[in-house]
Length: 323
Image 1 (tube, rainbow, N blue to C red):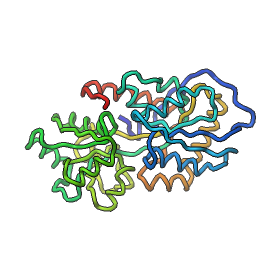
Image 2 (image 1 turned 30 degrees about the vertical axis):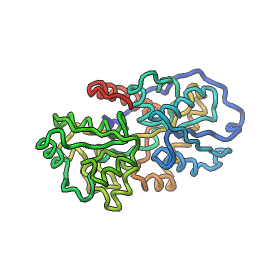
Image 3 (image 1 turned 90 degrees about the horizontal axis):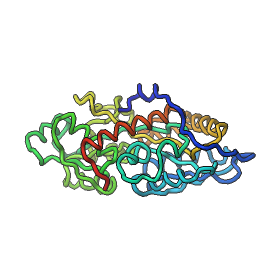
């Protein structure tokens, strides 16, 4: 599990790779920032918030490109194959670097060796939610209903093998029972079905669902991080709700090509770290319930290693298959 204590304590070597020469006067052309998810999602919002902050402060503009597909693997592969291109960066994530590489067969890249991981950008919880009109007001009530009606209580998520699905799997483990998982192709149809009463509950990422909570359309029962979210201060963690083993964190980070020259990696570390402390970026992140990350290259790389090991075990034990 990733906890705040783990995040603060993480340490490991940055991704290795063949060094390439840093161009004189870098950057010498616009920087390509790959977002491996569609527009308007958390990865896109975080990337564009940072790109807006930088503007031309680095000497060139940052051009954000959305390259979605295969749970983030398509965009990540572009950067993995971009060795030697010092103007190519990406928003790495739990999906593309912590779950996807152990969920999918024949992943075309190594999530560690094929990248230089620079900085953890942000973290946020998965939220267990029900329709605002539902009589269910707590996780324990949902569990009791599932025990009373075996096989009838379901929950939706944006797809098989997503962090939200895996959080549901941890809850099933913790209760010793099986909730019926309904995978959707994306968050929007899952939330629509929750609103329409087609599913009982939903596991959803806070940035995607935050508007539904603030508008009163959905009721949050618990958040998956080990501390409460500032965006939902009255909502307990799963630990507080009586399920201490249900602790997960959705995360995004800043990564670039393998073999990045050390001096350029250090510059990016300093630049991203400064940006994440700025009022402009912190305000943009807070709007969607994201905490700015504090881990540099060693800690972020170690986080990825830990996530790969954790989710490999969970996926194998539950026999979860990719869509």
